[in-house]
Amino acid sequence: MRKLELHWQILIGMVAGLVVGLVLNLAGPGLSAAIGTEGPLHAVAMFVVHLNDFVGDLFLRLLRFIAVPIVLFSLVVGASSLNDLQKLSRIGGRTIAIYLVTTALAITTGLVLADLVQPGHWVSAELRDTLAATGVAAAADKIDKAVAPDVWATLLDIVPANPFASLASGNMLQVVFAALAIGVALTLVPRDKAEPVIRVADGLTETIIKLVHLVMLTAPIAVFALIVRVIATLGLDVLGALLVYTTTVVAGLAVMMGVVYPGLLRLFTGMGLRRFYGAIAPAQLLAFSSSSSSATLPVTMECVDERLGCGEDVTSFVIPLGATINMDGTALYQGVAAMFIAQIYGLDLGVTAQLTIVLTATLASIGTAGVPGVGLIMLVIVLQSVGMPEDVMKGGIAIIFSVDRLLDMCRTTCNVTGDCMVAAVVAHAEGDLLTEAQVATRLAKADAAGLDENP
Figure 1 (cartoon, rainbow, N blue to C red):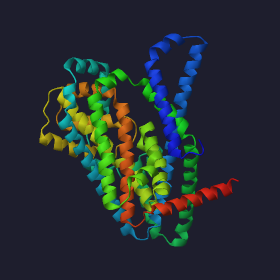
Figure 2: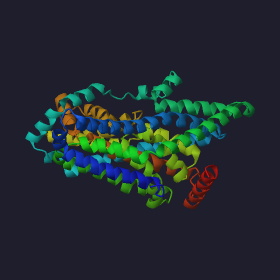
Figure 3: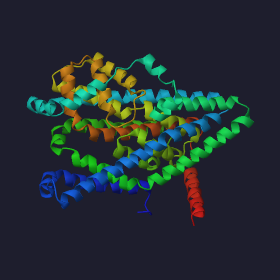
Figure 4: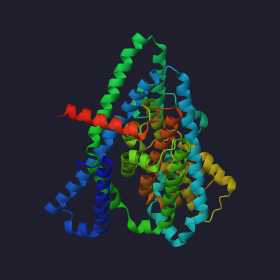
């Protein structure tokens, strides 16, 4: 395994997890009967289940442990090294503009596909009521947690009242603001006083990156554990019932990752698909396994910086910001889900309602935490914006809840891919994007240095 590239190791772990999870799902009732509820066989089975959960959860917790420090320290270094504050404003302006445009494109893509395929018409009224009854409690919980977006409150919330509380809670948008503020302030302090602070932040950045490397050594095993848990608990009968809806969402995500992102990359950077997807594959596979762009953040930053060749200044700003405000996959899913729910209940969402969905989903994506399941909460906000009755919302969300985790895995992969694409476009515009040959040379030197340090 050590001779294989990391993304191949992760892919092997993922495929093995899919196979084992599918076997467990199909054999679940038989296994439960054979194991029973007591005795040594049951004890062994429960130990394996708990060990599997522990490995997956520990891996995600380690990545979240790394995420906030790497954003804080790398952004402080990056912002403090920019004596030209105009460059920082250019990077920020380009990043936010592209994120908003791609999010709107994603929602529009989802709405167009939903209008063409009409996935709601493939579900009978009897099946609709049966599925809705099974998930009504979970749907009610998501509705209770939903809060409609307030533009002024969202903008105000970017500035932390207590930066230490922001660090403790992992509020990434506020961490980005605090790090940028400290970095910019360091450029205004006399260099002899600022230099020690910058060196400490730079040293801590390198230390956290080493931690990322160490944690990623366990990634293939952790991905196996995460995938087994999801596939083993996913009801294949429900997946079959919602096959058209699921396929419509996945097709829309495929359009974004196979057409929109490559098209923008080719237009603005000239970069080919092989280089782009080869560089970010570890981040994509981890995003698929974890369903969390925030947990994937350290790996995404490493892929974009070291494997894709974007400058550290661009990487440390664009990727953390993207993990917070760029939810292309989630936004596309919301567009399809809103139309699907309207169709199965016989409601007509006209052009005005669909434009409202585009606007609301774009605003709702800003500042939303990149954690599993948050897409359903955002969906409630979108459905409320078009005046959907609460009983319809509750029933519709209950229906799609059963396949949400699978779609969450897919849309998180799209979210992370979009972050990487924007980083490449912004880095190229700033003249910070290395060529493929330069990246290969740098990686070879890093490997040689690692061998020298560990003979």
